[in-house]
Length: 294
Image: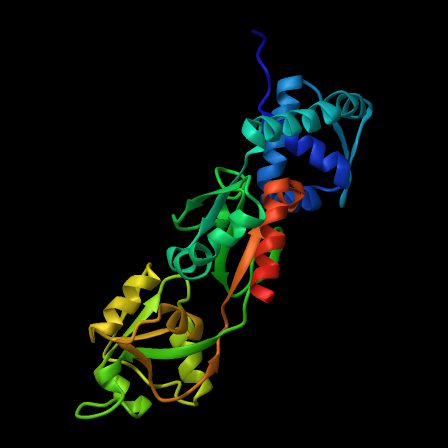
């Protein structure tokens, strides 16, 4: 069998020809410009000749590049379509590989899965709850739901919520002996922070005009459910979203201080721009946006 160049190099080449610039192609493929340039250079070394006329702000295919584009552009599209068709060939089955945080999946998606199945019976979801989902888009993940301040501008992104930061603790701290009624009391308590929302407490104390407030300690978690369980057991005060508390339906928990602070973080649906053109991603995206809007 004849040796073939890296498919990633061919994909990078086609993207640059179609967009007219390395930056635009890198944004489309969710790559850095240097990474995309290296892929093209690798393809040029394999072929043994340059494929572009390189300018200060642009790249245009030379004669060899135009010839290669005419040959491989349609073939690459056919390959992409063939893989998608094969993946969903059995009984018209469509499969979406979704990166999502466990707490969001448990509170927002799992309760709605029956409705999704009723509306789209051939769409099936594979959940991936490992961290850093956005960085793995196109590499085992089709789309992701992430919590962030600002998603990568190279990705398609749709904001799913606006929320408030609550101080959440065990209900017995609301009243009676040992009640926590003033923010100043946090100096004797442990604050619980999610690693994906590291600035929640900082933004909260800034919003109430107490930037110098320091708790006894700050513990970091990578699981929202563990944070809620720890708060319910009196381990500390969790700084999380209002929706995390309301959707938990946990009578052991209560908000403290009756203070509402706008969160700097939101949940976002993200995917590579081209992924939004595929049926599973588009169907799930449209259903999710409509469901949360309702």
